[in-house]
Length: 166
Image 1 (tube, one colour):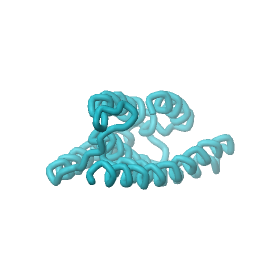
Image 2 (cartoon, helix red, strand yellow):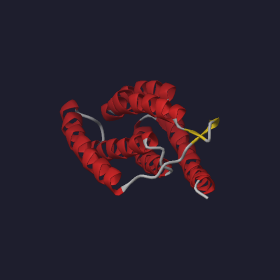
Image 3 (cartoon, one colour):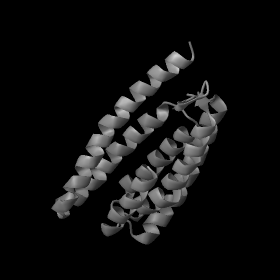
Image 4 (cartoon, one colour):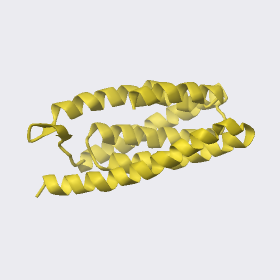
């Protein structure tokens, strides 16, 4: 995710999707590093090949939604100022990306659903871009594959959570 964030920021910049660029470089990459450290500190029963799946509390959800709303509102005005292409979907992408990053950090299976929601928003953004520049079709294909991967990831994490909490 860290390497993808850098590459995706470059592609996003090329089509004036400044929100995507800022989100992935300024939020997703750092949160991925933080999540990696958190995951490495929480192996399941000492096995370094598996992370302990955690549950989010009601307090976590409230904090997450409040923070997501604040980050999204701030980014809306930043993106508007920068003249971001497709402002509303780009702003929604910030929200779904933030939720996904937060839930990844918390080791919740729902991070995969948040990433799937983000994939759908990004499919909308990049289909719009591909209409004007056909070379972006490859990015559309990339996020279509990510969508299926994230849905599979959610199913896998829920199974892992069930196995760990038995």
